[in-house]
Every structure is written in structure tokens, then in C-alpha cells.
Length: 91
Image (cartoon, rainbow, N blue to C red; front, side, top):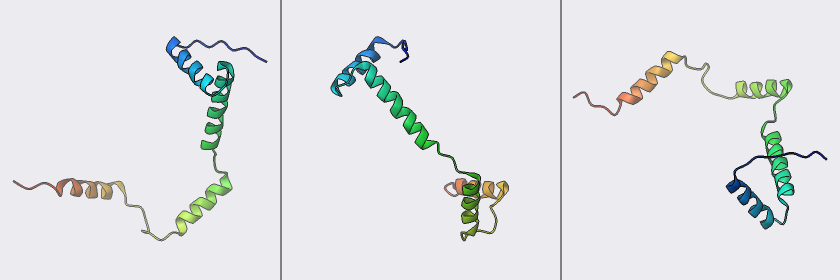
């Protein structure tokens, strides 16, 4: 088993030790468990779609009813500016 040296502020170490004891673990075991949990969360949150899944996703998006085309940027700006001006008076 490898040994790792960790430099952390004393206050953090005290908090980690306190929490580890509350969970019935040594500091070393608690830090290993925390690292495993973080890696597992990262693994689950970064699942990527395969190329085939992406093609299916885009087919599904294209099959939905909606406008025939996406408005261009100038059209978006007109809507944004009209919305901004709707609350103003011309005085």
C-alpha cells in the first residue's frame, strides 16, 4: 500500500478527525472513503453519449413540433430590445 503525505491547515485536520470519529473511522479511512465518493460522483456525472446515442438524440429533437427554423441573432436582439423597452415611457 502506498503512503501519501498531505499538508492541510490545522483547522481542517481537526474538522476531518472529528467527522471521521463521528463516523467510527480513522482519519486515513475517512479520507480514502471521501476520495472514493468524489471519484464515483465524478464518474456518474460525466457519462458521455456515444455517437449513435447522439444521432438518436438529434433525430428525436428534429421530430418534435416547433418552429421550422431557429431565429437568427438579429431577430433575438429585436425581441430582447422590445422587451427592455416595454416598461419604459416616452417621457
